Image (cartoon, rainbow, N blue to C red; front, side, top):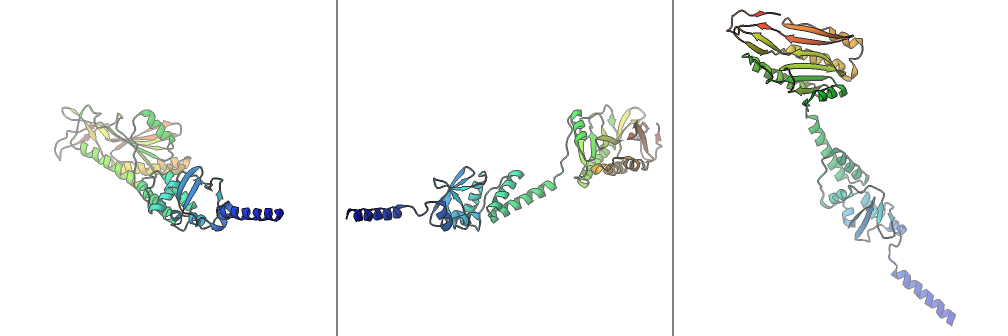
Length: 326
């Protein structure tokens, strides 16, 4: 009798123990039955702890819904945290999107790309599309911007020219560096040079680096660089000897400036290296009112074009004789 009582007591204890045990005691049960029997979920995403509901995780047809309904196997630690082997930096943003349907995205392109990768991993299509739309808007903004560096020192200029792989056009514009008065058309021509610079920036944006120098010694001078060295220079200022006083005159050699800009395009992507590129640069036309000087340095020369140097001009009305003197 005592043996039978002992067996009966042991069976009763086993039955009571099985009733008191939780339904989801181990991860194997969870894999088979999912989290639908639970209301709240504890998530450990790469050490970042999050407490949310099954309803939130199930809002979109995503990897998180699959985890909740048992379609995807998960690991659970001894304290009941669902462990996801993923960086948890942006997981809070993913949860907020599931809660609200929208979320502010980071403006930094790198962080935005990280959020997109997380959205794609968890298969949250709404957030992924939101990220892609934001990246397309950023791309449109970046493509329409033309940035023009301003040179602040000679050292900075040397660094820019040496490190840039694109052809470079520099406009030196310093109207205040003048001890004489300007002729009547100089201000208009100076503005025309600046306007031409802006038009060239828009036309060759991405192919040529355009820089401005407002601290140099020249009043208006164009410089053209290829492969880190100066290829040509167009000086637009000259001294006018009037009847009683000297004046500074600014010219606008639009055709020559445009020609030199086209010439340095052969240095795009390193195409100006070798004798072929130099030969193309030498095959150029010359203007009747332009004086050219070649500064030789071995086989390489810098073309310096000065517009109407040392002009004898009485600056009087139309029909008066003008004499040019070198």
